[in-house]
Structure formats: C-alpha cells, structure tokens
Image (cartoon, rainbow, N blue to C red; front, top):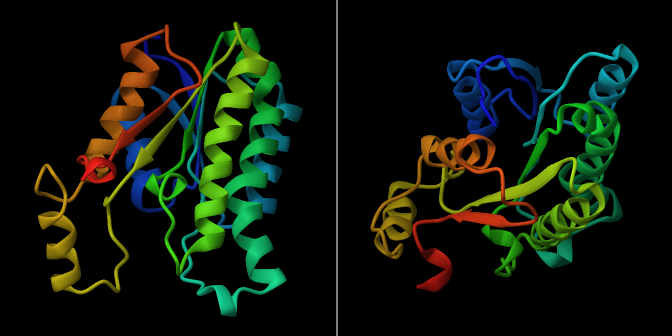
Length: 216
C-alpha cells in the first residue's frame, strides 16, 4: 500500500506511541484523523461518526489502551471492565464500524498489542488478558475480513516505559534485553509502516518489537 494520500484513523493518538504513529503516518503523506479520548465509549463514538459520515478510510490503527497496575487481590469488577473495555472491546467495535469503508478501499487494520500478550505480569493480569485478546482478535478479524482487508498487530516490548519507573529499573530492562537497549516510539512506528507499506501479503500476524526480550 502506498501511504501518500491515504486516509487513516489512529485511536489513542493523544500521547506516547499512538501519537508517534499518527505523526509518522502524517509525515508519510497520509491524511490522519485522530482519536484521543481515553475511554472505550469515546473510541466507539469516533467509529460511529466515521460510519455515519460515509467518508473514505484506508487505514485504521487501534492504539487506544490503558496500563494500570492491579495486583490480583485489588482487582475490582469496575477496574477489570475499565481495562478490558478500552483495550479490547473498543478495539473490536471501532474495527467493526470501519469495515465498510476499509472494504471499499482494500484497506488495512493494525492493532497495538504488547508483549504482555505472551508473558504473565503478576501485577497486571487484566492488562495481560486484554492484550492476549488483542492477538486473537487480530487473527479472527484477519480470517473474517480476508481478502478485502488485511489485519495485523504490533506488540511492543520495553518502549516508553511508565513515567514513574526509576532509572535503575529502566537500566535493568535495557541490560536484560538481548539488543541491550530500550525501544523507542520510532521502532514501533517503523513496524507499523512496514505492515502498511512494506508488504501486501501479510495478514493475521503479530510483529513483536521487543529487542528480543521474549527469547531471553
């Protein structure tokens, strides 16, 4: 897919990786619409407006998510729903709303998972469950929407670590990563751009961008 002149929607584009992806697509020549409201309802409302408008859409980047530390004993039904609703439920319904537009354009969907889909984090179990769901959602949509729409995911590792992590923790993550550094937002943007513009024969896959942490 040639990115110049394409129309894209990036959810969760107000900060961090989502923001970097939106900027990267704009720099590649895309006409980018952004969603930055941090709730499932906000993301689904954005998709509904696009569906109602009848406007063209070639690319959907599902980046909206939250990462909340929730030790198992402290998880409540409300906090569980908050994480699963934004990280997984909204992703499905935003994608569903975009299908008619993407089908006409033979477009692409990129979902943002992360390595929590593949390894258990004891203090982040709802997050891990939501991201594992993103992987299966990606594969399910890829099967359901082929051959008209390609659906893939990018799973970042230690990229833009939480602001409250201290220098020692950050250094430990870098030292225990096979490529010996933390990832950057640009590493994720490059992966997204590859799946959009670098190949048209990949669907249903998850591109892990973690410097090798899953194989350490």
